[in-house]
Length: 416
Image (cartoon, rainbow, N blue to C red; front, side):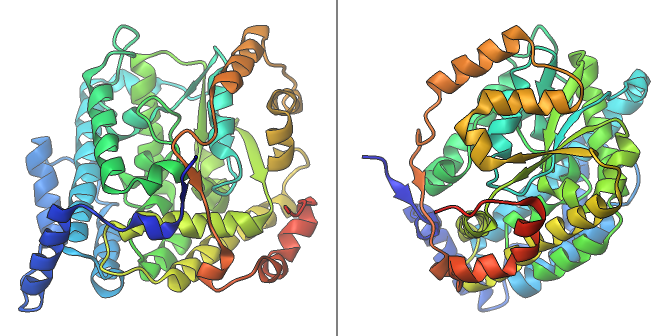
């Protein structure tokens, strides 16, 4: 029988880590806690990278705002403080290493990122499977999960399947699965699977992915209003580096973060082929809130699902509102709209529709690869994600009212 996982399954069950959190809690009560000082994190990144060149200081304001929000709002456990400090340090270390590598390889700046496929939809709207199917095109390259976190040195055609970082990435993910088995049932994970653009944007610490780690509404409010240009500088620099190692005709990219800064995205990739995926926002909102409650539960003393749900419905509404405002003034056909139900019903027909929108057609080899992948990939390989809107203070009827403008605008069918 396939196991159904809910956000309640996300709490840490490892006895050693529970002991760590208990001991850490006792120390915190007397004023001793693992540090989250921005200067110390910056120094750690410099030491790990062996260099101090961040390529600018645009990361500093989001670092300070994120840490301030963590300290005042996140209610982190001892393990959470250690893990999130390590995560932020790792992102800044990767930024320094990318900067040093780019200086040593100036030809990377001349790499052109032509006509990337960019998937804009909210999480849980079929973006992962669509990215995977696009990546089966022999002329398209998806960003792999392992590449997103260890950009340089870029893998080459000779090492793309056996780079030792692939095994190391899978080992890290196995460790996360052991700590929190529910996550793998809720979100596909694997070193060679298609990744979101989040790791590249996290090098500037301006990214929705920062908010999946902890409940940080103050940081989130700042992020929605900030200039995202510095994040896209890192994003493009990373793609150029990877493209040097493996020449690429086109990329398959995705994150809902793109939806609320479309103008900035198109400044960097003016010929991008944009795909906006749509699904009944009732289950989308509930699923996203459940996923983030699960992820944050590994790092916090106690999860408040009502607060997490309110936070994430706000983020999703902001993204869709920005997309709708852009759609209202953009030229017709600026993107192709794809409905989750049609994609699940006939993925191959959906792929043909997408390509046709841009005056193209999938190759025969691409179509055969799609058919082969669909035949071998079960959706519940690691369990099933179960979620209930009541856990977050909603009903599907109340969510239908909240999302009426979006549903009517794009004629989105309500799921049973």
